[in-house]
Length: 417
Image (cartoon, rainbow, N blue to C red):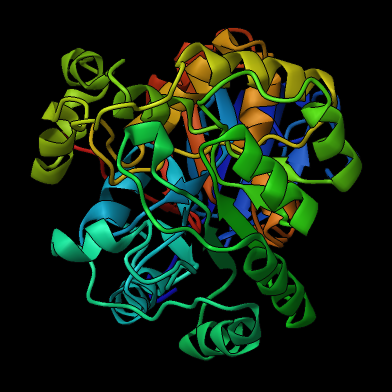
């Protein structure tokens, strides 16, 4: 980063390391990296406490009182779509890394380069151009002017060239769109199952992780059997196969539930609640306010969905040991970058996850699944992407929005408001 990070010592905070909860610890930061985690009950990768258990403050370091507060790794939003201004919005809410799952590769490349030298923007990784058929799911983004026209494919034999082109564009992973429009009542052409399998095969051959968009139980099963690494949503059309959780667990497939955006898409909106929250509203930009003010999208005749299905399914997946990742799917209607990720954590807990499991889904779990080895935990040698909140979100998840401070790479983010 171009900004010099000052030395920092956060003293006496409860610490969620990404793997464990420390009742009280000190965290020291130098040159944007965590250098010590001392005191409390140390996790495996923390440094051993010295003397009275308090870490010494580096000369000239800023000392922050963590008593009564909880220090978390910077949150990772595992499903979002980024446009100018979104990364600045995300980091205000402690989302220090954003995984973009479909974008104009040229535009997101510019934002990625800007974010690399600007702590006041979340870091970003991207899928760039997603795989779909001509006139298939995703074309509406072109029709609405959000994306320029992008390449598509129709046959399994085109998969290798498609994947190679995404790698050349700088994609970090491959997004595959499997959607016939049935859940929204807007029939669409869809990728053939053989093409999905070929995309996964060639992506893995290039060392690329695959993420599938699927909103029906049948399409989700198709994606999992093809070997995708991550489901970008939970399905909404019905309860699905009772054996589905075991299938995911056996295959090692992770899931990003996106409960908040599925609610908003199909009529159970949350935008008004976020706009009315004094912890949220002062920190929203104009785009976020606009998106939160949208109602549900118009649906066509015969739309098939049941909004209770995703939460019920998530509970079964968690019980089966499936890896769960937290994602907001912002910039969709009824979402705001950063803020909706906190809402998502609350919905995940309501669906049956413990607060610690939900926090894991927004920190160490996406770091592990997406190969972000330098973040997602509080441990020596890792990036000082940090979120300090009042209270104890490991007991009451709503406390994640009681934000006291955010640091990206050891640089404190000014929140104003």
